[in-house]
Image (cartoon, rainbow, N blue to C red; front, side, top):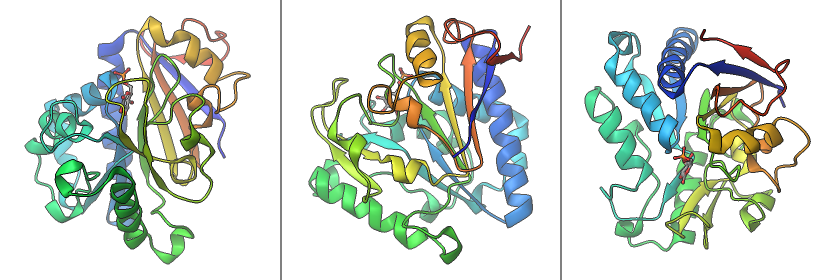
Length: 258
Ligand SMILES: O=C1O[C@H](COP(=O)(O)O)[C@@H](O)[C@H](O)[C@H]1O
């Protein structure tokens, strides 16, 4: 797995704008090379702000949106259209404003599906397995880009410190119960699925994340600080603002915005 590269922007607004520009370039390059791309979206403050920044730039038209598979790294187990669903945030910020192929948008099922959280996780794992090609050598597509927000406790997707989901070695998707952050019931990709991505980008802004960022990039293990396990096969980026990067050694971070 790759060693993280850390890029620090001036503030959360520049961070979202720069992450959006980087995301567009990444997807355009992937589609130029392979014809299509798989991207995994995240919820969270900077994650959704990044999608809104993509929607706001004319450069978004450089992406062939109909040749893009869109997945989620986690979802709050709430009814369709609920404002707290990560899917709802992503649709409002970006997906409702671009010409997607609906068959290639893969939201995680919620209670409206009639499935239990465990069944919903299993059904998402099956959907991922169907999309995996022989060259992916596994039960999920090798996502071209997987975005993750990070909580002040270091959680990524819905993998929270000390919870059983962190130890999952076989399944690509699990149900999460008793999440310390509401709502308590969620669906999440596991580390094996996250680590299958070619590139993993952690986007985090704000001083309340500084300690978790520091630990994720230093001595902590993923059971203590899940973001420490957020690594891609070929590349891992921590895209930060100055506040969230405040506790990392200055030698680690590359300042990208004056
Ligand atoms: O609950 C969640 O929180 C994280 C981070 O959220 P933030 O508002 O602190 O940035 C998010 O990445 C995750 O997808 C989500 O379900």
